[in-house]
Length: 415
Image (cartoon, rainbow, N blue to C red; front, side):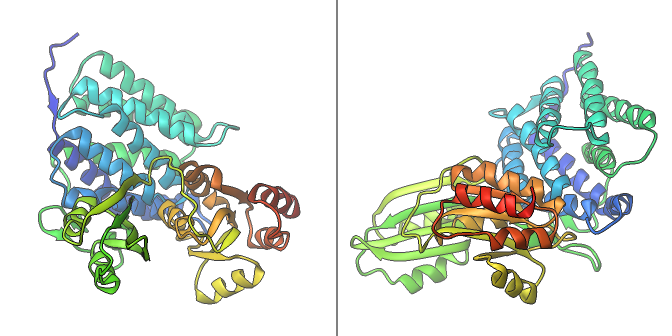
């Protein structure tokens, strides 16, 4: 075993993530071309990466463990499409492997990367082994041997890429999922070496988007749910709402128990708390990371059960509502809704429980991820066409529970 003493810092990790994002900016259209049809895996993974890199622009945490967790949180919550969910789980595994570390040795980072591969493999349904799984296993094996040899992280990544390329050669055909894995690894290598130039984002200069490329600011997520009570009977709720909207994407206020009940979603819970301490004594405060499994507290819900569907535009939304959907989330096969948009819909307190109705095969992992985060208050009806989804909605009965409805709706859709 060599005497490698390399240390991977938070700054190194930032460059790796930015390198991966830059690589996807250059390659996402080529990845889309490999899939064909209406789904756009390259776009989905690029937008998932855009959500993941947002926290790096303004975080004050320099430790690799804290940075990797923030990136993983944003990636899981901002994931779009099957490719985005797989990538987000890769980040989640890396974050788990680096938890609590300020710096990491090459061996520690290599082991965290192997952990990420394991998480990415687990999120895909069982069945016929896909090229991305074959390649992921080969990548993990290549990384394992390099980690055992205690070589620098660039050599670990190079070994992983070589092993994956050999596996893809044996498969005998190019594949979008496998190409995403290679682009991620090569982007990390370029970032670590500083050998990349991002055409759309600079951590030192701020955010900007060039013509024809997705604007990363559109994909910024607010994964922290804050609930608190301000004990101030005279508080001006309109003024509080105006201040909170500058820090949050979702804000609900109600006057109760001699004060104001606040429910919001933000990416900056510390900034919200700093504002809130000036409004009056704070009570019953809770901060929930919505990218981790969490239970929704049933408030004064208007409905017992509500159905959630995905619509391409306003006219399509009206059609889905006419078909029986109570909540409509924006999205299409080419622009899959994010996990955060589905979770936010279920946080609205419209209903005690929700049924998420998918109308496209590429939505399936995103819907499953949303249910994994939200737990028992959410049921899934995973159809693969708008026609089947509308048959399912037609079978909804507001006198039944979510579980009873989901079973009947799946039968009506033939799944």
